[in-house]
Amino acid sequence: MADTRHGTTGAMKPAAAAGRFSLRGGREINRMGFGAMRITGPGIWGPPADRAEAVRVLRLAVELGVELIDTADSYGPDVSEELIAEALHPYPPNVLIATKGGLTRPGPGDWRRSARPEHLRAACEGSLKRLRLECIDLYQLHAPDPRVPYEESVGALVELQAAGKIRHIGISNVNTSELHRAQQIAAIVSVQNRYNFAERSSDDVLRECERDGIAFLPWGPLSPHDGGALRRAERIARRHGAHLGQVALAWLLARSTVILPIPGTSSSAHLRENVEAAALRLSAPDLDELGG
Image 1 (tube, helix red, strand yellow):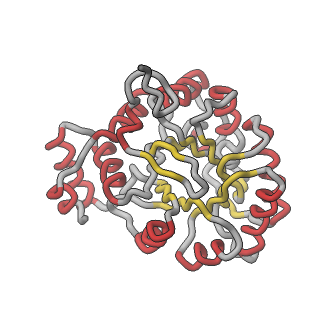
Image 2 (cartoon, rainbow, N blue to C red):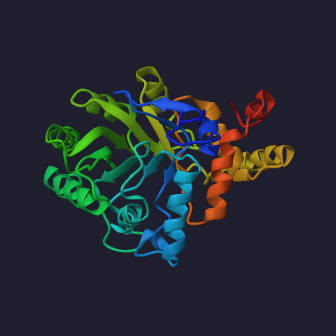
């Protein structure tokens, strides 16, 4: 009999080795996702140098069992969402598209917060058009805007949800206070913060997510800057015959069952390496060496 546990036939696909996670509301996905920021040009600006490869990367991710594709209107800007639609629309029923609004991009490498309700409404409409969707599976507020009361920004997403424009609400780049404030007015299903084995300032946010069954999407999973931590991870990688990035991803998967890594890349070969990390099991001594 065909194996259809993950929306495909045949053997279980590599991303499924990471295990499954059920979003609040019942949607179940493989924990190993894909971040679509780096399929754009240098400085996350403009089109990629190799558009055909960017499309191949997106299609390969789905072939490997990735079911969570994370993007934002600011990636490009617009380019990442347009490529996702070009590569994957009509979307397989098991694939969840997550995007974000709340930043503007005046130029390469320039990121500015803009979370006024009118901006978020326009941003959502733009994402719907580019992604060719009537309803976005997961729409995330990219970051709090210090010029706008946080409740107003989150409230705009609640209104978009009530209007049928978005299904689930997530938040990003938040502390525990902002998470609690958002939860007072919305059913938050995900938090996306910078987090890796060397940078754990969001440990308290992660604990809150564990308590409430909220998905934690770590950005920057492959870019720790602590030299000592990197050397320890490199030793572990050598012991396992693995790449450093694979150890970083395996650590995230072992760290908490609510963590859904979303590593990004513009290379098919690198994508395969990242997804193969779903099957890497770090030992207790490995985890101790990385600091738990």
